[in-house]
Amino acid sequence: MRRDRDVLSVLRWYPKEWRERYGDEFVALVHEGFGEGPLPLSLRRSIALSGLRERGHYSGLIGERSSPNVRRRTGSLVVLVAWALTSVGVMSFSKSAEHFSNALPSNSRTLAQVAYDVVAAAGLVGSLFVAVGAGIAVPAFVRFLRGGGWLRVRRLFAGLALTGVTLAVATAALGLWAHHLDQAQRNGADHMYVAAFLLYACAVVFTIAAVTRGAIVVVTQLELSPGVLRTEGTIALAVCVTTLAVATGASLWIAQMSLHAPWFFQGTTPGVAVSPWSPPVVVTLGVLIAATTSALFGASRLARTCRRIH
Image: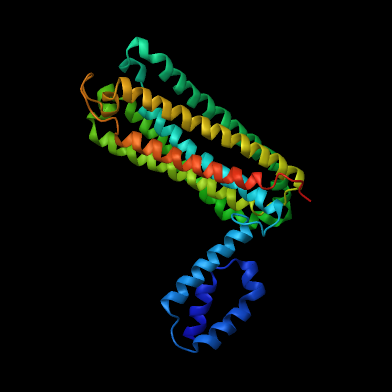
């Protein structure tokens, strides 16, 4: 019946565990309260919000209802998402900062250079931390595959492989194209190249998002011991610190460039009074703010599980 389909559709907002435990009671309650008529929009909205809130509790994203193990895993994954955003921000920053020292007076370069070096160093250190965290989870991943897990993730890995190959081909093609252009053409004179570069940047972001999503899907299915979760949580806190370092360094660099060479961001003649708020600057800061907010939220979830995990 249509009513049953409607109830089942809104019931999907709740996590699977909740549906298995309370689903039948929920369906009976709706039938008793609303008969066979269509579900009111206000009820649908209320159910959706309640279901999302319940998913948040079950996943450990909000509240204290889930076990410390679940909350520690979730906090670490939130920090991983934050690092994916940070990686996008670092790439945008690196592109925006190309040859910046040539635009600054010699007596104003030191602080901007230090800020730039902080971003580069923190980006490298954070990537190493993420790699170490992934390495620690490898034994659990191997056990997962041996237990038949490959059947559950093979489509995911096939999609990631296709995405990686596509990006590699695009990288080679764009690099070959750029090799035949002069500096002016690479920096905006060739509109076709600019359009292709923007598409390539979107492909890179999509790839980072796909890999991050794949990691989350896999990690949520692994059986990680309390000791491994503690270690992963410690690494996630270190990644959070590097995210803050990247955001701080980038903000300081932008402030220095805005003060001493605002025309650099707009690509205009040196000395011209222009606004430093170019699209690349806005995108870079926006992404890094989102990354920092996510990292701090993940770290706060981890901080709530500092007591011993049983």
